[in-house]
Length: 116
Image 1 (cartoon, rainbow, N blue to C red):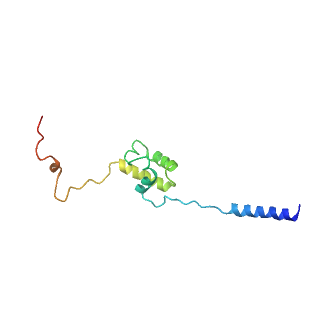
Image 2: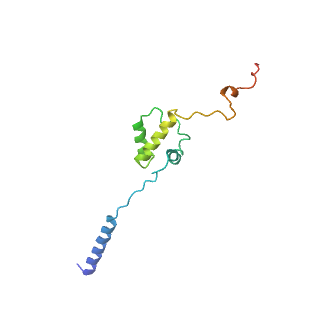
Image 3: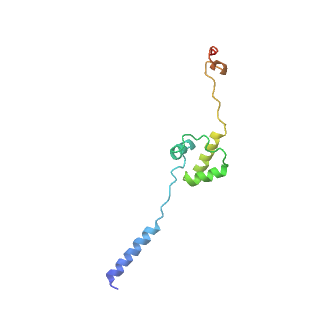
């Protein structure tokens, strides 16, 4: 073997060792984002609203599905799962009456509708 070929071979081995030694670290792009924003960025293209997406599903199976198909990490999957379940659980803040003191009875028409 000639010295030129040996040097070329050593150079190739050195380059391969250098390139394989550096490990690329993955970055979680969803980390720290609130659940409504996660929904808007990953789910809203197919689903208009988060309502009804968790109905009839177990917490764990919904989490595993979201982790596999929609989110980039386990923390964002849990956040999205909790968000979807909170929307469907009915635990929302009730609307406050208007500041003028209006009640539900004031939402009726002022007079009865005449029969035809």
